[in-house]
Each structure stands twice: as C-alpha cells, then as structure tokens.
Length: 209
Image (cartoon, rainbow, N blue to C red):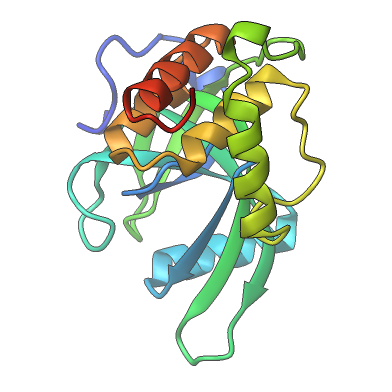
C-alpha cells in the first residue's frame, strides 16, 4: 500500500473508479476553468491519453510537496478535469485548458512507475439547483460585473446566476483568497453555508453593502 493513501481507506476501495491525479497549487471547482502548462513526461502522456480516450483526470490541491518532481501529497477532496482546449506550438510544452466537472473524495492512491499518481475516488453529489436567497443576493451584481469583464473564455456560458451552487463556486473562483481558503469552500457540501461565508467576507472587506 502506498504511503500516499489516506488513513482509514475503506477495504472495498478497489471497487471504486480510478482516475489519474494531477496535484496542483491551484483549485478547480465544478464548471470552473483552469489553464495549465505541461512539460513533464508523466503529465504529457496523461493528457494525451485523456484526450484520446475522452476521459477526465483529477485535480487536487497540494498539501505537501511540489507540482514538479517527486509525487506530491494532495488534499483528499478534488475535482475531475476535462480538457476542452489545447495548444502545442512550442516543442516539449503542452498548454491545455480544463473545465471542472465533479467533486471527488480520494479513498486510495498509488504511484505508477512513471511517477504519475492514480486515485480510487468516490464522487460527491451536488444539491439540486436553488436560487440565491434574498439575504445573500448582494453578491450577484459583483459577480455579474466580473463575468462580463473576464469574458466568455474565462467564464463560458451558461451563467447560471439563478443557481446558488454555481454562484458559490464562481464567487470562490474570483475571491482574492489563499488556495487553502478556496479549498475549504470547495469542501463544503452545504451550498448556503458556502454563500454565507462568502457574503461575510465581502461585507468585511466592504465589497458589497
């Protein structure tokens, strides 16, 4: 068993789906986008396989270690990423844009001979769409302005401002907060709790009234 496995991994973890894992110093939320530059062979091969098989890989925030070199230990909750655009105009470099799809919880992991990590994961459901409560709606004009300014490449439509979960993830994307704080927002299962924390931050920093 790899030392990268989380404690108390379930005995039936081998029955769970396995995905390649890309530990990063960045957060990817469901339906968010992230631009990545790949140059290590393990990740170039991973991206080529994912594009060929039309399959996702997992992105998780690094807890110990770095993006380059020895396999890093990541937080156990991450998001699957699907490649939506790519460019290889420079030799040995692959630029990709990924879109987040589904949160997952890592139950078991292993490191292959090429140092690429693989994780057995349990996918986490999202709540049914619900509107942003009136008491938390002060963030909507701010988000609308940021979306318009950033453009559709960064935040592609549809912009579901009537879905509290979507709004919470996009607000977490744009807030000037450390990666670990963004991770904590990603880990929350309760949509309204996420919005309440964001609303408190915005009011504390006088970004909304």
